[in-house]
Amino acid sequence: MSHLLAIVRDVSPSMTSCELTHIARTPIDVDRARGQHAAYARALETLGCAVRQLPADETMPDSVFVEDIAVVVDEVAVVTRPGAASRRGEVHAVREALAQYRALVEIVSPGTVDGGDVLVTGRSIVVGRSARTNEEGIRQLSRAMEAFGYATRSVSVNGCLHLKSAVTALSDELLLIDPRWALRDEFREFELLDTDPHEEGAANVARVGTRLLYASAFPRTRDRIERRGFSVLTVANDELAKAEGAVTCGSLIFTVP
Ligand code: CIR
Image (tube, rainbow, N blue to C red):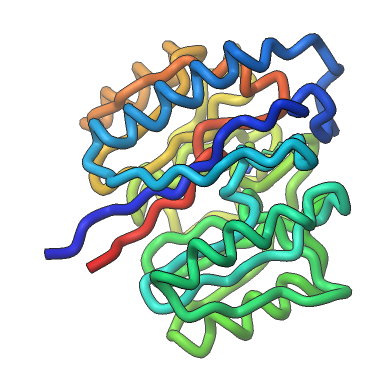
């Protein structure tokens, strides 16, 4: 029987030198970030995933955020070429791990894609045009996925790091959106649930099978999600959030036989 596998990667000792785009640098307690990441991995297990932990790399401050390094669907894994040059070395370990489970396609120069910009629901893929993901990267991703029957289109992202900072899926039909950062009109085929306007950063939720993993910092939005009938498990993510990481960023979740 098939089951869910989550690939995660330990917090790097150099995380304090992470990339930052939209927030100011504040001191990061690496041990606390490690503790939160370990609790996140346990939560993934609670939600039914087998967890495979890749070792940290001291030379790669952002390597805990494995989501950006690949887009994995049932048929293929697309290994990205991250938009931040400092993150390009992260692909080697993730590529090696994914090669055991999927055929691989690579995004190549001058294309760039961060997995945080790629939202997959069913056979539909929406990609954010962000500071990290360029038109050429979108073209390459689109071509790779088209071969397996996935339709890809791109949308604008404004004021946040990635598309999935602004909008993520609660189900294949319902998206959680912060309308300040993504345009509702660009998601007409979906039903949309707004985040609570007092909770910035609340639009990122991780789907794990039929359940959801969410940050404990957003109780008002959590309430909105639960009122729609979803089961939500929360984890503390505030230390990792100082590196601009949200809950989807820390794992690559996919089905294995
Ligand atoms: C970066 O700027 O690349 C990291 N500090 C944060 C990446 C977060 N990843 C994500 O949203 N998918």
